[in-house]
Amino acid sequence: SSAVLQRANSMPTRGKRMSQTKVTYPPDPGTKGPTPVAAPIPSFKASRPQAKRNQKMTSSRICVAVRKRPMNRNEVSRNESDVCRIDSATQLMILEPKVKVDLTRYTEKHAFVFDEVFDENDTNEDIYERAAKPLVDTVFDKGSATCFAYGQTGSGKTFTMMGKEEQSVGIYIQAARDIYERLEPHQKIVVSFFEIYAGKLYDLLNGRQKLCPREDGKQNVCVVGLTEHEVQDTESMMTLIEFGNSMRASGETGANKDSSRSHAILQICVRVTKTDKIHGKFTFIDLAGSERGADTMDSDRQTRMEGAEINKSLLALKECIRSLDQGHRHVPFRGSKLTEVLRDSFIGNCRTVMIANVSPSSSSCEHTLNTLRYADRVKELKEGKDPRGDRSVAEDWAEPPPRPVRAATQVRSDAAGAQYPPRAATQARREKSITPPRGMTPPK
Image (cartoon, rainbow, N blue to C red; front, side):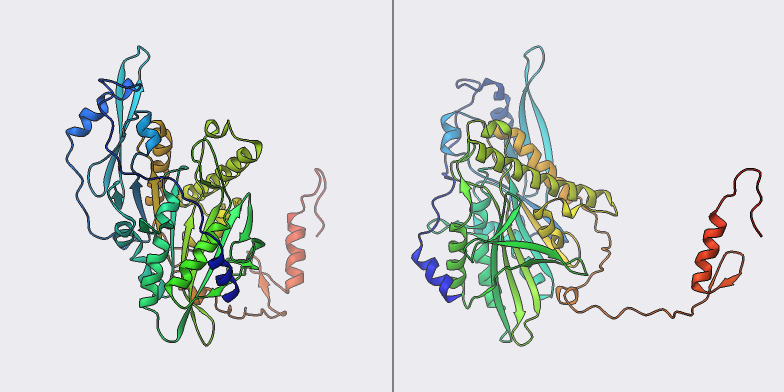
């Protein structure tokens, strides 16, 4: 850990991410501007009351929050409209501009209800206090907590999780501060940080060494080769996170100049010092953004292949959510490396918070609707019983009890009541299943 910290201190932090500048919205497109289709939107928005703050999120197993980012400079320069209207602390509406066959312009309204809805004026501190902070209790109750950000490219996922040092602290560090405040003397904190890029796992704190996920007998996912670093305070953890984030794969696309091309997973584990057993775990997942094919048409082949792999893994995540929602016995968690890692976030003794980041611009209306629809599906996941039961993380990683051994001389009986030893019973079933040819009688 000391060697990694020295390397992290010597390396510069990662470049600036998407620029989130607080601006005033453009004038009514109905009077001037290149987007007259969205003319009904400003008049409808002006007639709605402003959103009011809500208290902390309810303590359910899966909670979904939505964060709306401000309009950026490019969207303002194109004179785009804000199609996302927040009606209350739990409700928002998307005003989708459309044109009929006879060229009549109209606005289609899509209403959504979530556990929490944040507007462009809410900070990372507000989001953590009202959404992610209740998960710290789960970690110290011997549970597993997961917080992941989902949304299109350039919607502010990495800004929410990582933050900017000069503007706002991300959810990573705020959660670490609260965990250190509640840490007992007989406990310690270990940190691991890895990414999923092009269907492969890489350790961000160990020179991007390749990793391999495996399942044990209890269907718990173990990442073989992943290094864990013990940290003593929040400053050391911040240094490790910045170092790992600088090693993350990124690139420029048509939708975002500094786009994350991988899924980043940060795990903060609370372990018992003497036994080194896991007491609780907090997992943060910064998902790569989804993109349309039109967003990457001007990019090279490598960028298009990266976008295809990202969309493939996000589709596998959506299929798992759909299977859980419909109550299927089989959930395809093995469809991608991402769903294998996220398996513990939806089953077992866990609590999960999904932060759906959306863009307010009219050009991203299709992406925004897709994000909100799948966030709504996550919210509707049933609270049914899990096959593994409501067990803690420590119980999940405990040694399984020995299986009972059946005696070799055990006697079996068929439906007619006749009793056979084990081998004779198998032979009797085979003889009864044989159908003789027509005209022949079975042997007695």
